[in-house]
Length: 466
Ligand code: AMP
Ligand code: ZN
Image (cartoon, rainbow, N blue to C red; front, side):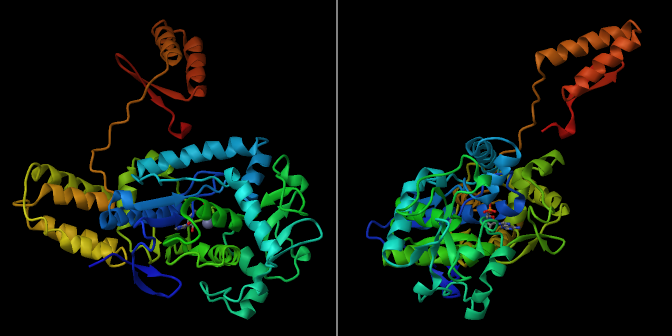
């Protein structure tokens, strides 16, 4: 069976296949907004996309997949964060991009082949906007912003099936969405409430963030939607095979991307649209605005491994909502131990490589990851005799489960802290309590806890230090 994925456009399962003569499958995944640590809900979407990437490699071979995942490094949120922290935009986005990469690596997500940043593609975005203006699909507003004229694109709403009536309340819909550009949607400037910004004229709050816009437009910055249209075109061409993101991106973001790209290029934008479902907490979407989130660091501080989180995410069907519970991480850790022990038991063994077909069959059936794990564990239950180690490793690759035991964290204690601790220990032996106390305060202020034993002491980082 070939790999099939749900397609949001046709609302049906579609077989995945490359459409370009070079046989390279072109895959674009909307990436993170880099203004804070991504939460584990965000990572649900990136882990699901990593599974897609891996299954595409299983299907077509690693050299026949081109995976692009962008960085949204200019939008309302990133600009606001920079302003609040009195830092430059680049400073903020560089910091959070590095954090995002570290978390992706910990979760064993393969890096995309290209990771374009929106601020590195301003000319490409301006060019697209210019074409849209020249073709009559976009217009300049009084303040020098440029808007896309939704009524100029007959197919608008095909993906999300938004009805005309809902569209009329477009701003309300947009505000209820996790759109990255909700703040400066300025309804007064638009000819129609459904139109959306392609280019936003500079405002005082934008500080130093501004570029030269299309002809006749004010200096300013691109809207969020055009960023993805331009980066996808630049790195994958005018028509791509698959475009993905979380369900909240379906409208308006992806609907708007289709409108911009198809009007500009005059050709179909993406053959296939896939959307993964949300991670919930107590029945509500995990989100920064609700404050009900966990980051990977928080889970690590509680003693959970990133691989356990990946396992928990795999245990839910990617297109069904998943309610996150901390207790599920413990069960996941046990499952990983079982997998590790099994891998050790089959080491060096060869056997029938069709044994794991049911696992791959579940994966090919719209990424049924819980089904795949079920099939895997029923094979494990039958015992390790004659199980083919190389085939087992292929299953681990497809699921992205790294079975290397988590390394014991080795804490490096800085020399000045050891020195202070030695001094405090000596003061304590000399019963100079004042000096000992003030040295302890110094050590604590530097982020370390000194725990005394009978014959010496231990130094530990204060838990909240990271
Ligand atoms: P953002 O950085 O806000 O653009 O989000 C990055 C990705 O995370 C997008 O594909 C969102 O659809 C997705 N996302 C946001 N919240 C959740 C959630 N609670 N569960 C799953 N995916 C989410
Ligand atoms: Zn996007």
